[in-house]
Image 1 (cartoon, rainbow, N blue to C red):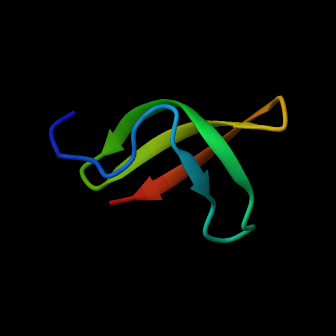
Image 2: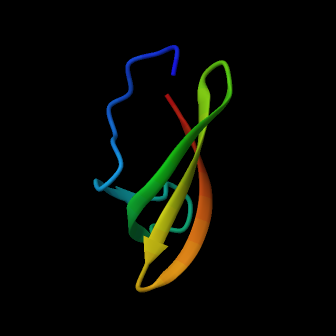
Amino acid sequence: MSKTLTYQVGDLYTTQKSKVTGTIKEIVEAEGTRALLLLDVNGQDRYTTWVF
C-alpha cells in the first residue's frame, strides 16, 4: 500500500456507522485515502470502507 496504515490484518475494527466490531481479514486500498476492509464478525464476512 502506498500509505502507512494504522490497522493490520488480525486487528479488531469497529465500523463507524453501525458500530459492528470484527477482526480484519484483508485490507485492500481502494482509492487515495480509502481502503476496503474484510472483517470476520462472529464467523460471517462483512466488508466496510475505512477512510485514512
